[in-house]
Image (cartoon, rainbow, N blue to C red; front, top):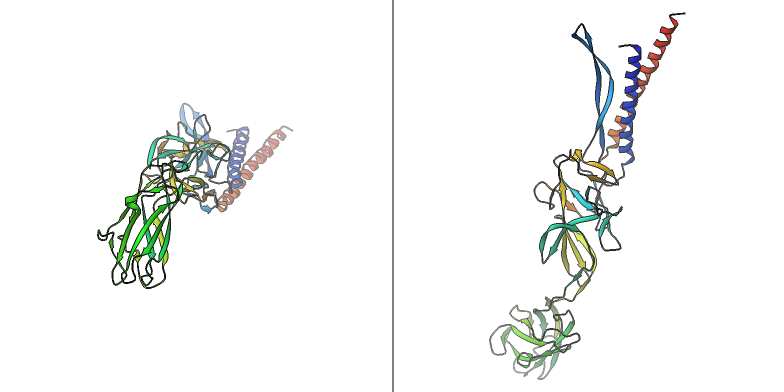
Length: 409
C-alpha cells in the first residue's frame, strides 16, 4: 500500500471515531430523557486484497468503518410521580400510541388528557387500549378516551341499621333512625324508621317507615320488633327473626323513578339491640349510590385504567395494550421518544400487560433513561484517543510524503 493509501486509512479512522462521538454525545445529552434507550457504536474493518501472480499473498487493511449502532433496551430506573397518568413499564413491551396515520411505540409514559378528553403524549399521539364495557375487555384497539365518562346510579336494594333502643323507656317513647337510600335514577332519599315503645313491662317496639321522595306501601310501612331479656332481637312482626322487606313507589318523585323499588332491611345480623341505655344510631350500611362525575383516574399493574368518581365509586374503563417485537433493536427511531416498526424489527405482537412475556404497568411512575454516565465517559475517552491516534497517522504520513518529495532536491 502506498503512502497515499495510508492517508486514506487515517482519514477512515478520523471519520469513524467522529461518528462514534456523535453516538456517545447523543447518549449523554439524553441522560434526563424519560424512557430513552442508549445506543452503542458498532465498528467494522476495511481491507483490500493484494494479488501477486494470481496467488493471494497478503491482505492489507484500509482502515475502519462505522457499521451502525445498536440500542440497549435494558430496563431504566423508576421515579415516582404525582400524576396518575405518568406510567412506566416494568419488563418487556412498549406503549402503543397513534397520531391518526398509524401506530407508533414508546417507553416514555408521560401522558395527559387533552381538550377532547383523549389521553395523549406531550407531542399529541393518542394512547391506545381496549375499552371495558360491563367489566368485559374489548378486542379492538382504540383511543383511550375519558370523554363523557360517568358513574351510573345504583338503586339501594339492602341496608343494615345498627341501632340501640333504650329498653328502660316508658310507653310510647319514640326514636327516629333516618337512612339514606337511592332510587333508580340516583336521587337521594331519606327513609325514616320511627320506633315506638309498646309497654314499660315488655321490650317490644312498633316501627313506622316513611319516605321523603316516595310512598312506602302500607303492608311494608309498619311492623314490630321484640327483644328478649338480654336485649337481643328475637322476633320481627311475629314471624321470628327474619329480614323486613320495604316497597317504595317513586313514580311521583321528581324526577320520576321506578314505581316499585324493593329494599331489604337486614335484621338477622345482630345489629339491633334494646339495652337499658340511651337510644342511638350507631351505623348504617346500604348498597346504593347516585350518579358520579369523573374526578380522577388510577392505573393498575395489569394496565386497567379505572375512573374515580365523586360518588365514591371506581369503574374500569380501559385496559392498555402493549406491543413487543422479536427484534426491538431493529425498530426505527423517529425522535420524540417514538419508534416505528421496520423490516428488521418484525411485526408487533400486541397483548395485555402481565400476560405472557409482557411486563406490568406502574402508575404514578416514570422510567428514566438507561444511559450509564460512567460507561459513556469511559467510551468517550477511548474514542477520543482513537481519534487522536488516527489524526497522528495523517500527520505522520504527511511528514513522510514531504520527505519523499525532498528526495529529488
